[in-house]
Image (cartoon, rainbow, N blue to C red; front, side, top):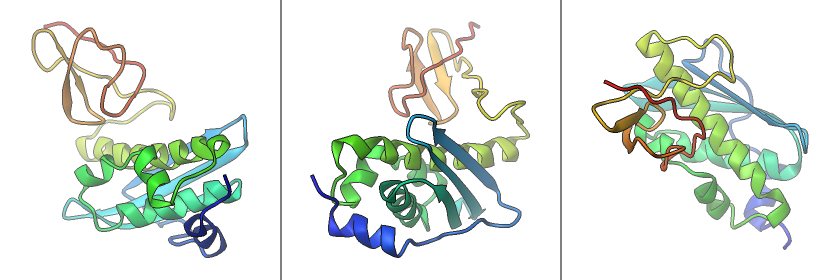
Length: 173
């Protein structure tokens, strides 16, 4: 599969390039296998993504994905932006070759991390390390709460069925 015209357009003329000064949230991801690195910064106003920018070191697909995911997020509520998925990014780009689908994962993940960073700061939660997961806390007996998605989960779930975060920490009442 060749790149779609949409992918090529976002690669040649990427939107929202740069870094926001004093951002409300920062999301950084990388794939050591292919070398792609993405940073997304956001400004939130009235619970909406008022501004979003990216810096990406990577292939053309990674740059196109970064451009598209920032376009998709701008103007959306925080909740709506958290629902942007790797699949929806790839679909908006008109598809990606199989060997480049991991790039769409990076774009959605960087956006989600930026939003989660914003939510954490807003609630006064601070991570000690960037790769440290936010604790998933029990909402009530027999369920686990995913703060990434603001969603109750069955306790037996090994990961969040909505955002796919693989490590749920279960707390019992």
